[in-house]
Picture 1 (cartoon, one colour):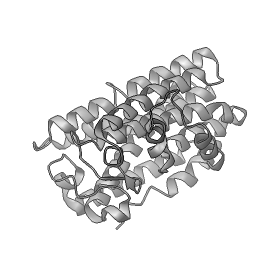
Picture 2 (tube, helix red, strand yellow; picture 1 turned 135 degrees about the vertical axis):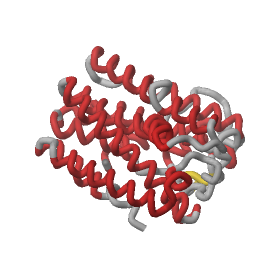
Picture 3 (cartoon, helix red, strand yellow; picture 1 turned 30 degrees about the horizontal axis):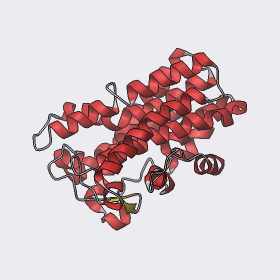
Length: 283
């Protein structure tokens, strides 16, 4: 991941214009860091099966991180969460202005597909990758989840609807990251399906853990605005802190069991990543 991080920082997009701050804003949230969890998952699958394609997969991994970052920039806007802090830095609409934040989000979204299209991979592979990223990042995933989250703010959904919301808003891009790694590595449809379903569980666990962090940590400790979920359909609001921790514990055990079912090359790459995150809900 150090090599990928160096690649990302060396390839922050630049706009060919005289705009005084757009380039700075374009790179600000990418350069602020983050867990790079989605790129790690994608690259781990590639490295497990086709290590010679690892560097060719860097643009795709960066595209996933870029799409994820655009979603954070837009999620923080006053019209959505109105957050002041992200990745330990002021949010873009605070550091610059709302118009800049909206347009940077748009640019990161669209440029992610340029990166995939320009990657040194076979054309058929790139078409499959674009299809997966567009659907799981859009109406078949993240955007739909965000639409449900915003529309039903202040209304109480059923437990099943809460799971649906967060599977789409968070889980599907994580699942797509694993599946996209499998597409690059040339794995069969069944293995792509298994990895996608594994990613859905992983995404739900991440969301529950994030809701726990929101309820138990300060903004300074979390590196992002917390205590902002009072009217949302969060797991804390539905199941309470103890119930959410119990639910996270069950999911973590399920994911650990699924991990054991993968073959040794994949397990060896995923285990070190997931060990850092499986039990971060234990407060």
